[in-house]
Length: 247
Length: 349
Image (tube, rainbow over all chains, first blue to last red):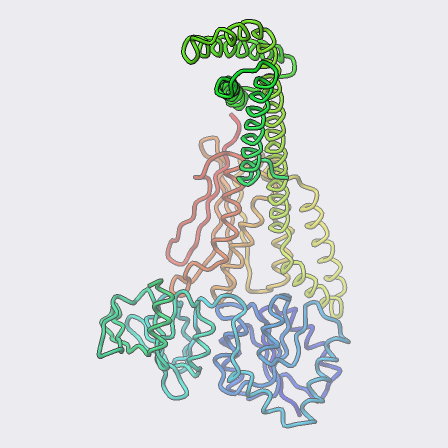
């Protein structure tokens, strides 16, 4: 028995997947979800082997939803947006179905997955889906985080700085701090480099928040943020900062 | 060849200087070998005459830059050249005879005898410079005109393309086709109906001209097709209310103006909340203006100005500006959880 979950905000788009799945009696749909919030809950509850995932959905999109799941299952994207295909494959998706897709195309995607699954323990494949950096389809302008059972959307302009914390990063805003299981280099790459600079192995700062650079000792510097927080600059971080600021 | 590039200008200038120097040397040599004048006199004569010629030529060049006679008025140019040649001859004689070499009798005689020939020669040279300048500026003008025309055509094409893109959202089209594909298996009758609606909608979109004014009731009929398709796609999540004031029905507005605004409202509403939403479209007539209000719910907490809001509306605003030369016809405001877009269309008096 294979458990699958179907996440798409259009009921008819879900019904066509259900219809095509009749050819695979071994796959059962544990739940149909209207949006990413439901999807996160359903995945935690059912621990499915496979999810069918739309990209443009209410509140958080498919990529953002994946970021919230610790051990994501295999993913087949179903979407009308062909501009996301590359990103989807970068995220190690099994396949990418462009709506409207035919029954044959759908079956091919499932076969591909079944084969991969039999050949190896594809757990490895699915785990890398998220530890391997899932990039945003467009310029990242918000970060989605999980806070207990709540999902919070942080616009990037509210971020003051980001600090490394073991396997996590701490994201600091005016009043709050959020934990997210991501690497520093992920944010270094996905945030706008004109606004966010990695000034240290453990720190990325938002340039808008920077008020002053002050020397600490010989050849070492501190960045002073608006909020009063002081962030150490590494040698290369200081050099990068000077370039971005045009000094 | 680019006629106005600095390197071309420099080349032409140096060719001019070289030509001028050659003229001076040849003339001086002729004077020495034919009339046995001293080299001093010969060079003074040649330099002076060619300086005058250069000045006259330069004046002609500048004159033609700012005023280019049409071929019909070419006679003015002729008169101008004759006058300049006459002035130059007189000035040359005056300067040479009274100021530089008052004692040289033989030279004086030569000056007197050569007046006519000298005048003719000057006239020819000035005319030559005039004609070349005239052609030069004419060509430049023409090239600039061609470039302007080319740029204008390109702009117009781009505008047309972008307006097409805006009317026919590929995502809308593909998602609708996907819905039809789903219905085709389970409810063929409904699939057929949706194909009909989609066809009617597309036909209406293609047929209409951007500049055309249509009665509100026609535009709303077209919009209804769009709304019906979206309702099939989003099922229970999307409700629409259209309230039309009776007297507004026959008022006119630019064709296909409302659909992008409503599309924007639907996207904004549907993707910013997870609940069922209602889009309200209200039309009324006030002060000889057609007013259309479109309301969609949104979540003020998470809704930083999403790209969706701005983009669709900017192009509508731009279109209204192009048609009415006014920037105040489209406005938006937020009341609690409602985002309201208001469009005013002035009616002809």
